[in-house]
Length: 56
Image (cartoon, rainbow, N blue to C red; front, side):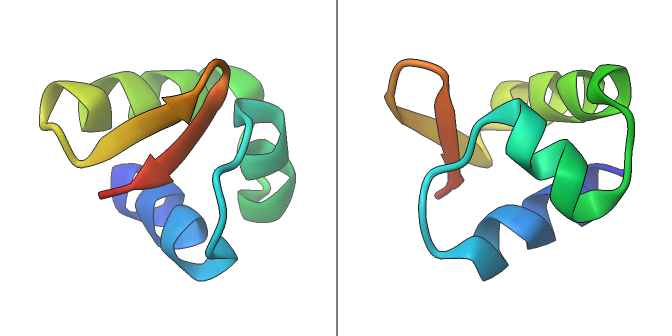
């Protein structure tokens, strides 16, 4: 699940909101939030501006 979210961020080429990631991946918002929290702890994603995230 984490990898699916990370791949969606990389393929988008721009910072995305959690809701946009959920729409792209087909996962629920809760699943995306959980995956993003894990990726944030691994420092695999960064937030260039509030509520938007992108892969490092």
